[in-house]
Length: 568
Image 1 (cartoon, rainbow, N blue to C red):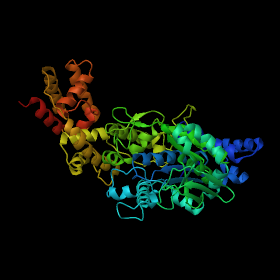
Image 2: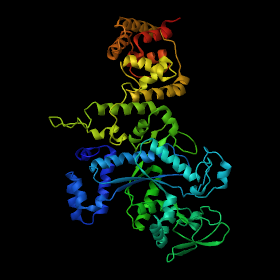
Image 3: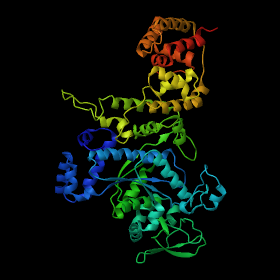
Image 4: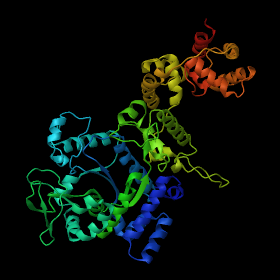
């Protein structure tokens, strides 16, 4: 699927391909030892001879590791979706750039050994969770009574969540990594290099925290809680630390085998080192943590991954979205009103710019995605039909089309013949409460179309009904036309009656709407269109009215004018 795209990928300007090129540069730096090797590898890559590169340098056959984390103390949410979808897009770009000859892995690591510090608001049996507070999430009882632990419950929800979107990933449990021995080597290194790790961490802390800080968080053998206790003795020769338990008893424990975990910045660095992570993305709020963890990673003998910092989403009031505040959108809310592809597109577009994440962005994001998908499938940008113009002038690179990245290199062959904004207005005018009503109009406008033949359109119809019922209908404010507008509506009605019965030519209808507005002297003409929306639909804006009338029907549009304009 992604093979044979290397020449286009080298030229692609989408940010995902810029990141893919950065990963290639990292591999050249980390996996090759001499300048001569790098020169040869650079030539092979530049000429698209990736298979030969892997044969010449077997170290390139080792998978490139993309990684992201999941906070297992809460249920999967919109941020979880972003954590996985962004690296998935970069991974697709990397595979195209390297002709899919270098294997890749996407690890989703659940931080399920973290202590449960805060009880989530959206779970039952909160009193039981309160009893287990500060224990590793995989040692906290499941408030739903379905799994061995709260961590196991959330991990199962995470996997089901990611599977429902078709993500290709490998799940990892931090608890399992600590207990199985996967982290043992790096944990011993942290112990041996304790002072160097402390020298990096302590300047980042306040005076009070600095006095007792240790990169190791022991698990109390008495209470089972994760303790923020100082390390009072270190024994690298036998791989143990000594710490005061909750009752003050000095206790010795090995740093391996799951008896301790690492403070999160050190944990991040240790994870990168133990798992050979090549690429990780994170939000703007973690810039300092990336810097600190990268320094620790180098102390531990690892090479920090290539990183990308994305801007955080804002709510409708341009305030940072916070799970504790509950502002902004939830995953469930977006998926009630918009397709997953529209959310992925919103996360793809301008990732380094702050954007509002609120209900009113959904229709725009949906239609922008559909426009890009339509452009891709029209042929000018489709991979199967793409060709350079005869005059060798630049042509749009299909890999720069957002639909390519949104769908991880496999855009669907069909989008929707009707925009989401048009559907919203159709729902509004028809007062539709179910998709069957909408399809009565759509099947007339698109002869032969069915929910089965137009699956995206059918999905959008359901989203449009939900959006209309929850946001458009409560805000509808019809107004009476002015005398000038009333005359223009009468002229428009006469023009529409003069068209062939059942006319569905959106351009022809649009021209008559223009002429009616110009004849009435509207200047600027957008005031005429605003009047159409406010008088007929009870809202201040909408899609091209000619397209709406073509789908809604001439007779129905005339009835709408009759009901809102000419009726006494």
